[in-house]
Length: 440
Image (tube, rainbow, N blue to C red; front, side):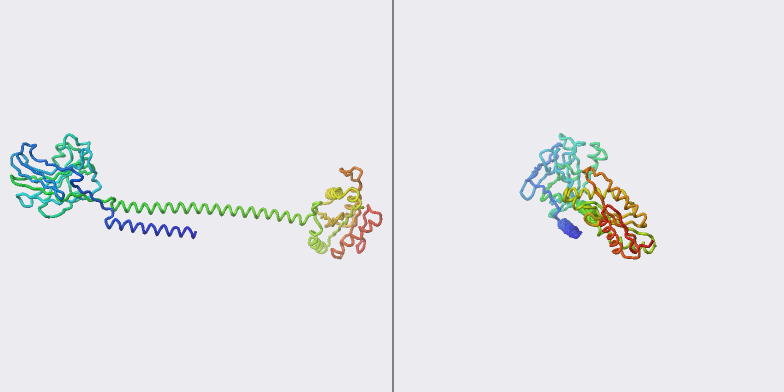
């Protein structure tokens, strides 16, 4: 999480710096744009009342720094006038989109016989819904009138102050949805003398004509910056969730790996425990595993005054079996012997390989009489057993029995061992009982 927090802090710092820099750039005018109308990008011509059989005379002088229209208006036509017509493009149906501009700057010096007389400024827009390329009057008249005077410098007018001429709307039967001002396809700009003129000398000098706009509005910039923040937040949340899910999956995989490893270790420990407690050849208990159990069972037996006996078993002449048939054969005999004995004893009896060919059976809650019966059953079964791996092979065993009295486990085992030794001395293949200290 530390790395993520560090990355998140960097992203937030970057967004803050970017937002401040971008908004500062906007405030300082970095988003402003201008479209300057000049002889290099437009064409100038005169329009006057000659088309109405007027007698006015006009002259147009185009200079690098200004455009000068001089008119001697004669009161012959119904509406005497003269104007500068500025074509922004070569075709009236393919004008300039000025809808992204908010203001127009006009620097005009106007000479007229009346002080404060106005000039008319038209931004002519083409729209195929109402305009016809063969009829210049069909282009929409977005108009303002103002008194420029002389040497007044640049005057700036919002484009929203332009109005569509009512006579043009009525004459062309313009629908309501197209009657508003429109600047998306301006092909001609006209600067004309006022509405009411008299016979006199007039001069219109255009010093500067420029449109002002912004590459992006303040509200749009704020929306974009807000969108940037929101998008970044969504991306960060998505990435954080992705990394978190990945970390969770990695952690789960690691935990599963640890669980599997622990399970494997546990199974191995069980196996090792089993191997440590089990004789590897016969798969019965070994003598080391019963020491603690034997001490506990003897204490319980003596405390509850219940019988407890044991049988010590030795396979007769087993060394000669190994010498005659080999150790592999001897191992097979031990395995089959163990399997056979397990079928003859009870579930409560504890069968232990004591070492080599010696075995012990501990018989809880069993007196001497019942223990002798178990021992004799084992001896007779082994003596009569037909060994499937060698039909001619015969095996016998000697057994010594002792029942617990007021003694330790070592004394009990020692007495059973002495009884076994006696059985071997008496000719083997027999069961002997240790009567020493036994209470009849």
